Every structure is written in structure tokens, then in C-alpha cells.
Length: 246
Image (cartoon, rainbow, N blue to C red; front, side):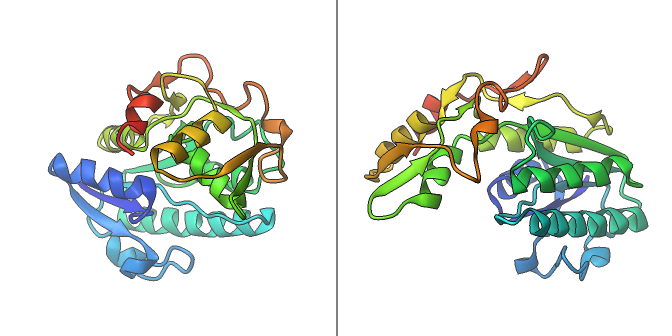
């Protein structure tokens, strides 16, 4: 198949491309750095010629809710419109488990807008909700690290390996559209603070972690809010197995 991947240079996009190419598929990379701008639509029509499926693994980080919703909404509209013009048969969106349960987070608001547009859009679709990735904890700590100290919220998560997410996206994209897919998660629940500590230790990075709620990741995410629902697809790679490769 000829498959386009939006967010081609990102954490999940690059891994998904590797999986697809290893399986013999032709991959079209969609990224601003590669000459295709989702925010304006420039280059999209040419990129999607002959494409049968699109995987949207894009992300956008900003604190302002309206900014995130506007950006992800605009890029999704452009991708869907170009997909319709090109005759794309399957649009696959990577989303987040629990996206409808959290109101205050800007990124979640943007993902909800993406989901709405895809579900109401002109291209047959599958939305894949995944839990946080194994490298999420250290990333969160890095956002606030200053002078060897980092604040991090004490979230309960069931993290998934980025490589497992890539495998699942590649599998789904090569099949028929399924609508909203079941939640996708790793095999074990983890404490985010402990994950960050262990990841930093494995990488030889010394930082004092201070558990606290923040405006970005607040107490509305406490408890089981971020955990997968019943019937979730459980990916195989444990956090310990992922950590051993850091």
C-alpha cells in the first residue's frame, strides 16, 4: 500500500514509518520540515496522490487552549480535505485514552477537536486512543526542571511503549476503517513520579523530583481517569523492558 504519515519526524510517526517500510509498504512522509505544511495545506495535494491510507500522528504543544484547538483543528481540516480530493480510503488518527474525561488540559481539548472533525469528516476513519507513552514521565519532569529540581504530578498511568503504538497504527492503517477503536495500553499500571525517577536514573540524569499538581496536569487527572477502559487492547512491552534499553 501507499500510506502517508503525518508527523513523520515525531516520536510515533518515525517509528510507524519504519514498521510500514519493513513490511514493504510505500510511505509518504508529511512534515513541515519535509516541505508539506499541514497548517496551510501547502504540498498536501501532491503528497497524497495515490495514497490509500493516512496516519495522523501529529502533536502540538502549547499552554493556551484556544491556540491548540485552532492549530490541530486547522491541520486536521486540511488533511481531511486533501484526503477526500485524493480518494484516500482510510484516515487513522492517534488520540488519547480518557480524552473526554479531562476538560482543563489544552492538549486534550485539541485532540477532542481532531476526533470530532475526523468522525464528522468525509474520509472513512479509525480513531486509536492510546495511554501515555513510556517516555512521558521523564518528559513531564523536563518541562519544569530548574537547578536540578523538577515538579511532577503523582499520576496513575498505564503506559505503553512507543514501538508498540507504531505496530498497532501500522496494523490498523493497512486494514479496513473501524470507527472508534478500543483503548490501547501497556500491560501494567505505574506511578508517574516513580517512572520519572527510574528513567532519569537509567539515563544517568540526576534531578530531585517534587510531586505536585500543576496547571497543565492537574488533580482532575487523579485516580483512574487516565487508565484504559474495559476491553482495552494490551500491548506486550512492560516499562521495565523499555527501561532496560535506555
